[in-house]
Image (cartoon, rainbow, N blue to C red; front, side, top):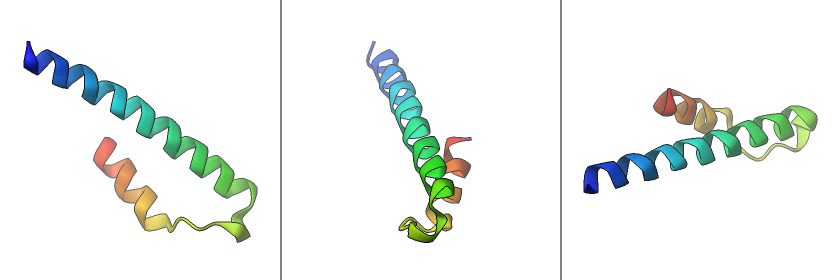
Length: 50
């Protein structure tokens, strides 16, 4: 039961992080000169999620 709950929470977190990551990437492309997030963090996040 606990394992199932952890799985559901993990899945929701994955979807939420993925959405935020995509939003940040799109926003970064829209105004590249005003980007505050370094590329390294996004690369690490994508690597960990995939």
